[in-house]
Image (tube, rainbow, N blue to C red):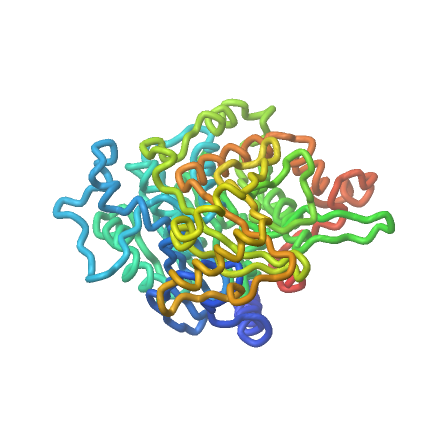
Length: 498
């Protein structure tokens, strides 16, 4: 192992230790803004993290959390058994039927985490879409991204490398579909440091490399975000392949005094500059918009998942129109029908304190307080925003008090009812409805439509020239004037940006 890799590993260990000491806490179920019906399915500690599988029937998710960070969520329904019964999905049907332990969830492939909706973009933006994609994933998380690839690309083979064998064991043990895909030879798990594995994979011709590794403190391991590592990723690609990176951060924004604001803004800019310096000049960024985001009034200082796709060929809409046409025409989960898998939950909000209760299943309120439905006022979505989530508000105090009484009466013993004990003076009741089939479709549509605006997202305009005299001598007309270049000698700013 050479000196640069040892340096990267040392920094990664330090970052993980910092997470344990300063920031990370084991996952709690009783926090406002989370579902009141959550249950912990399994928990395990490892030298790298504390991980918990958490399920919520009312919000239709099974999530793997590292401390309090979501590492990917999959919908509980449609179940794997329901998908396997669909004649249009023979590649998800096991010969003898799913084998489950008593009471074990049986999730399928539909994602509950928004950025996972974008995984297919890395394959569709290959110079030529492969019939049997070879995919290398760095960072397993919950495994739902791998399940989504298996759903849409039946001939795909996915190799997953994760430094923590405990994560692999948790996924094998609590996500039956992933264990089955492994038994079929369609997925392979490797417990190893990604830097060493990437070097050993040079020349293997992957069509897609997905970078989705995060420390327990929700930062990218520094040795996995440098020019040298990105060049090693490039060396594993097929001729027209791509690298897909999930980078949490923002573009940032300067105020009138020239002061920058925005969490981890230099991480996104640095990733763009560093990919291009590593021999992948076709980098492009897809900000993942949330429900009610307004593309027309995009706030560049808000931190979010940003999907950066990089390749040797140019990926701009002007240079690669056929790739963008594939993105425009793509429909995630075409076999599933909207309106079938919909979650409905209420939350009690205190506008003066700017706090919200846990979310409770709508069934706890609907029948016992029927007047609430008639008092709701719908919130209109912003033009161009994803429309998978619908919100409505009630400000009628009599109806709110009836709803709170219904929750206290109907909530099963052991439910986490933070924020439901007292009705605030200026209370507001929120009804949130999410269509989980529309969730990936609308996330995809909005991200692709927004990212196509080259005036906002072209790397040249965002971070300017990669390096050298051009950068030193050029007028600083690009948006992010201080985007760093990450190297093994100057590893990434994620530590600084904590």
